[in-house]
Amino acid sequence: MRTSGREWSTRWNEIHAGYVLNYVIFLGSVVAMLAFVSALEALRKRMSPSKDQDATSPLLGVNALRLLGLGLLVIAQQRELSIATIRPDALLQLLMLTAFAMLLRALATESLVYAPLMGLFLGLAYLTKSFAFLIALLAIGAMVVFQAWLQGRRLEKVIVGGLLATVVFAAIAGPYVAALSKQKGRFDFGDSGALNYAWYVSGTEKFHIEPWMTDKFGSAKVKLAHPEKQLLAQPGIYSYKAQPYGTYPAWFDPTYFHERIVPVFNAKLLVRRDARNVVLSVRYLLNHPEVAILLALLVMVCGARIRMRGWRQEGFWLPAVALGLAMWTIYGLVNIEERYVTLAYLLIVLPVFAALRTAANGDGGNARAWRPAVATAMVALLAFLALGETLRVALEERRSESSEGLPSPWYSPSIYGAATALNAMGVRQGDAIACMGTIACLNDPYWMRVAGVQVDTEVYNPDSKHLLEEFEGLPNRQQVYDVLKAEGAKVVIASFDPGAMTSSSAAAAGWVRLGETNFYAYPLTIAAPTPSAPAALGWDLSGQEKP
Image (tube, rainbow, N blue to C red; front, side, top):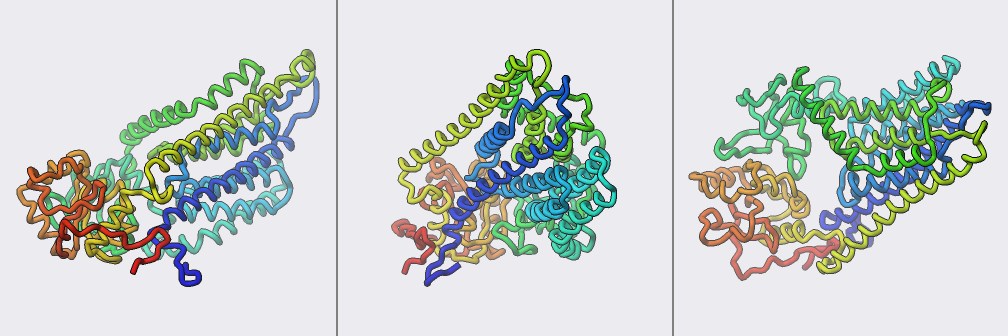
């Protein structure tokens, strides 16, 4: 984007734009959480029991539930969906939470407006991550079943609502599904689920699998359509020129090099993986003790309980909890990561707290009037403690950044130092390079984007701790360089411990340190810089090229 001759968004400052966008997404999530809780309250009121001698009233009012939802959202933002980490999961949470708010509104009112709105946000969520495709079908099905079975609405109106949600969802998701299916030559809404199943359940090799590696196929059927081209067996050197897109083509579209890996159901392997995912689920719950402590206090101090009698008439909590459990189960069958199940956790926890009740009438009713106030105070304390912890972390990071003397809070000396030094060596935007080792190739790849290069060749070595030792032990190091040079790579980049890169190490010869970082470059088709030549910054942080 250019305004009055100035580029506001370049590869040198886009990470800042990403952080700003992440913050905007978080603010959107706050609004979505408030909308979700308000919709939950509307459905709770619609399905409240009649006021009789045995009736009970909610322990937590809508304001307490809002505080609880925002407190849990802030905690999740600290632990799983950090603003400082650019991932699609936060946006997915925002869109799906909004969609579920529309779902609850559709159940709480007779209006047909909310069903298509739910379809709209579910469609946008699918465009963010393909996982939302299955959840969209489940959400639409849950709306139809809940209205027809538990609420007893007229069947024709239920069907119209379901069709409206489906049509809008199809209008948003359909073009992408059609384009993807055309590209793959089969119906396809996304292969991430099947690939993850093959990797985590079937035991298929995740990195650099070749047609002859039958011992690494696991239980999957593997007939690769266009595998990576292996240039050398020891060490493994792979070319990505068949898929010349993205900074690091191997993960720009992982399905390309893994096309026609078909997972096969294996009950034994699935049970083994599910056992691991149960452990990960328990670990997630232990990492969120606040909810368990609050629930225990509400039960012990305020006499909180869930009224299960007449659950069909009062089951306002059923749709959200069912969808949350479904999401957790789907992930639990394959692979659980904390950022994946955070939304499912919120969908389960908030309706449970909304379902907590305390006596309102009958004997002792007046004596128990203090309980909702005490419960609200407990929730407020949790919410403000979470907010205070966030403020403390933010101030601590600001102090740390100030002491480091960074030109901007989002500036990474490692990323920008490596990119700047690489450009100063003569590597320009669009040039092909090679990388070696997990850190340089996979764990910390943003330097590639900033430098404007593309990794067309990789020297595969998953061991990041002993990379230099293993490289020094190779009898064919020169052959490695020759192979990379023949592929047209200008340099090969790796991450080494600077303390080990001494003259006593034969493998360190010829490697040039990129600024003050742990990244090193070995010139292949460009001249090595003279020791006296400084790695001058070719760009300022606004993205303007220096003369």
